[in-house]
Length: 205
DNA sequence: AGAGCGATTGCCT
DNA sequence: GGCAATCGCTCTG
Image (tube, rainbow, N blue to C red; front, side, top):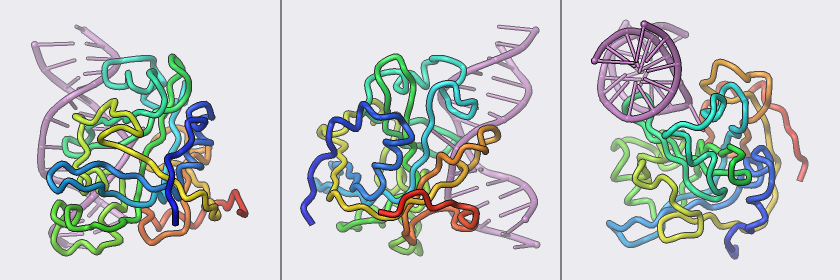
């Protein structure tokens, strides 16, 4: 499997398109403690953009959501519930807010650093099976806010392979449940499996 | 200046 | 399935 950086052209696509195209790609962060790239295959994403009432950008720019309004292809990391960091990749042109929430990764070796940051009994496939879990496993924090994809800390690679994609309502939001902007591919590491029954298959690649 | 709450998780019943 | 944990950000006054 040869991996190459995701094409820059992704930057110009609509947020929902980027959310789908990121599926199957490999996301890695450089772990300075071990001096190695760690991460996994993206298996679940959600799209947030514009005036969508469930998006942080719905009520205009604020200090927290500013990265959503800035350049595409960068990290937007925010803190929630007093204990979890959420990793997003920004989308859309400058001034037009958008981001893709990375909800789950299927871990790829090396796993030791990820294991050491998650509870002892966590199974390998569960190391990054949720948005708060993956940032914990990879030690992604607000310090990584605005990190550039393709930079020293964060990179996304693709093998160009296509797999069937499923869509469902987004998780944990009050409004906007009518749009199917949560996307996932077949993997044991997808979160909220219980709610996947209503998911629709939207591609047949 | 302060209340209310959230794009979640893990533990308890 | 229910709920506590825990705190920064946003909105209201």
